Image (cartoon, rainbow, N blue to C red):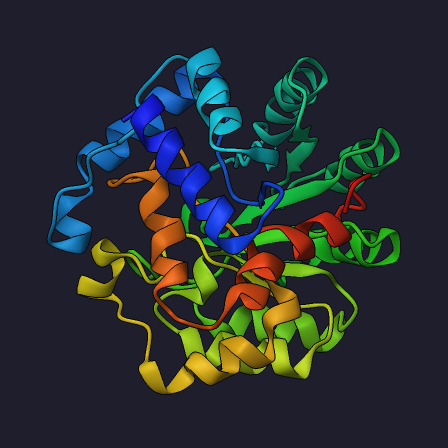
Length: 295
């Protein structure tokens, strides 16, 4: 890949008349944590019935350079804990990473534990732009009473949170539209970005986006050849994607994807929803949400 792929991405940008990309779902985390994530994906075949080779198993500086070569103007460092006592440490690393990495939107995470409200308030006050919650890996209920003040704080501060709440690639105890739907009923102004378009419960999460004006969805892995094999997006729902075009955001899962970055873009293009839709999804919606200077 490398330079050849960058040429392909620039071709996509030119065809779509895009000034660049805003990717709300990319992963940067401490190296020893990332290695464990990669080891998980190396063994994830039994969950999906297919291999999951990591396409961008590179050193951190090379991964950042690749995104810049693709024309990504803003991206995130999605990271997430799987046990108590981990989130604050991850947030410290993420803050340092964002400070030394132009283009990275300062990212943080949390876990239902003692002191979570305090460290989330500190994160918001320090300028964190986006949070990540992973209900599958963390195996927690978003309606845990310890998180209630957190959701209220994020809703009040209007800081979005990317939530892995769909049941792909394998269901968890608190995945699916039910738990997050109950949360939104209590916090209807919470700016939630549903990761992976809610894969595989796409239509249920489209329902939530239509019901709650602050719910957005990211495209991470959706429509790609890989995902269409085990979680195909229903063709009859494509019109709903067009109707919600101002609340769908580009996400890629870079670097933890089993195909090229370009393929995610081409998968969106082949939906044939038009250049205006592509520009909104790949750049304008994210630029507006994060108040980027040239957005």
